[in-house]
Length: 404
Ligand SMILES: Cc1cc2nc3c(=O)[nH]c(=O)nc-3n(C[C@H](O)[C@H](O)[C@H](O)COP(=O)(O)OP(=O)(O)OC[C@H]3O[C@@H](n4cnc5c(N)ncnc54)[C@H](O)[C@@H]3O)c2cc1C
Image 1 (cartoon, rainbow, N blue to C red):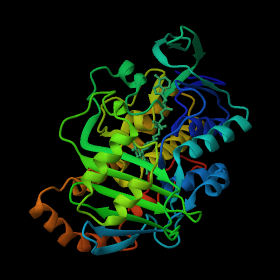
Image 2: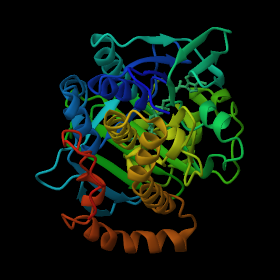
Image 3: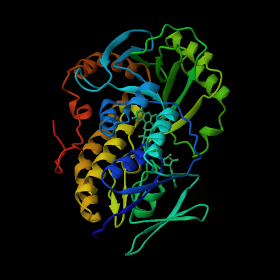
Image 4: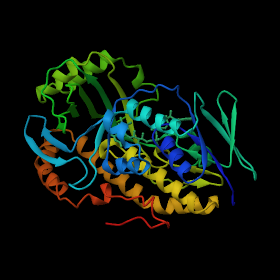
């Protein structure tokens, strides 16, 4: 299926969507993005790892993101009763790009602005309902009965991807990890700023992370186990005050700073169930291909989901730049990405498991073993396979993925 001057339809303007559109433009391929939500999006914050920042640097769009976020090179781990378990670099070893913590809404605004400045159109309020493909092209059909035509379609519509359901209806569904994530922001507590550090506390009944920015604002999250998968709307029906009470109770036996932070958060505490998704049998079909969480969602425990989505963007656009035969381009993209993302999802699952420890014996073992684990993690090169990834965008040829 060879195509000249192809036009892409991108579904989803989260992380993968705008970054792919920017790379496609560099590859000489025009793209328009269709996003289900209205323009203003919210959410908490995320840790954008150095490998993701490197992809943004390739596009030259990292500066506004660094200005809105803060580089956080260090993570300190604590047990619930206040023992300092150790510290590790946040991701990259010296010499590699540092991770940045940024509000999700700010990240999206920066990515949307960068795309729109380059003339890429983003259509908000367009929820994909169906896809029709013919020998001539592909049509996206939206919930409001409008349509969009292109030569190929990229599903960047997240873990519950409609695109994936359409091209691969029998594929395994997203896997509920048994963890629920809650979080919020507060400006109402006078803690000394530690802008280069994220603190992680392995509490008795929940895991707690916080970051005090230079301005004194605190970003925080909690992960806790919940055996039964919540219904789609169940968690959103719980109001902020109820979450606050539940979390205060959950952390009552842990370091008091946790409950001081939770108490000082006046509103906006919400929750998400955590899913991952891998391996998936079908990455592409005909004129349709998947990227980001739509094909390999990963637990936030690794802080890698957004970075993997950005890497996908560069590699997919690179495959299309080298080959306008869609079948070959999509298969090469899958070959270059599959092994890495599947390994990463497994790695994140193993980290999520440490947060699920419950009962005094499991917790005792975890706190005992954590310093040994941290010692391994401080080996400068041990995590190069995660953080030193190079998409090779500037290389003239398609290179195989680097191995460490
Ligand atoms: C609680 C939590 C914390 C996280 N923390 C981190 C972190 O610290 N670091 C990190 O790297 N990653 C983190 N992640 C993961 C990260 O958010 C994702 O991996 C990343 O956003 C994936 O980007 P994406 O573009 O593939 O999907 P998304 O960002 O989910 O974007 C998908 C977009 O598609 C849109 N969409 C969905 N359905 C349709 C449809 N039918 N039609 C049109 N549009 C549609 C959605 O509205 C959305 O805007 C976290 C995830 C969660 C849930």
